[in-house]
Image 1: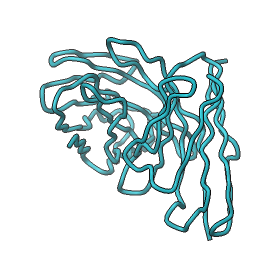
Image 2: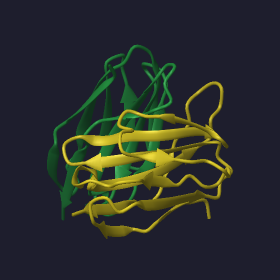
Image 3: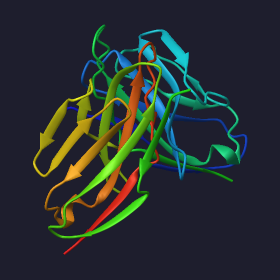
Length: 115
Length: 110
């Protein structure tokens, strides 16, 4: 079954304690990205990756890091989490054709609370 | 700056009562417009992609249409299982990121 898997689904942490949210896809997609979803603001892109070792900032990258060492995995790293990073996070993957844009497949989400 | 505005924010329908959701967008050049469905506690699920004005796509009780300024998601004779938040997103020419609207929360009562 084609899917994007995120872990953990729920996480409560304290300010400043480094954490990593993992994301893995089994569709051999080149393009992966991370979004955060906040009430009234919709989904906003944090970082994206066009392929292995190729990453770039999205619209709200401050306070986050990513890496893409393997095609299937795209972890999101919060080096020093702060309460304003409390949010619902989604990982997504898609093909990256030269022409028309294609749909993104989303993971189930990670609800992060920073206290 | 790319912008997407969805209306209404929330919509309550009786089962069988058809209606439309609106997605107004502003982009420098449209590469694609997407509709997603999101159930509580889950990730967005892809419904449709539209690429150019005049294009229409259908799936069961849903039909998406596109003009140069907006897209509509028409729901014909909805059922309670159609209750969800419907998200609209655009991808502008030359950009990789999707710009999402805040969504329309649809509730269909039996």
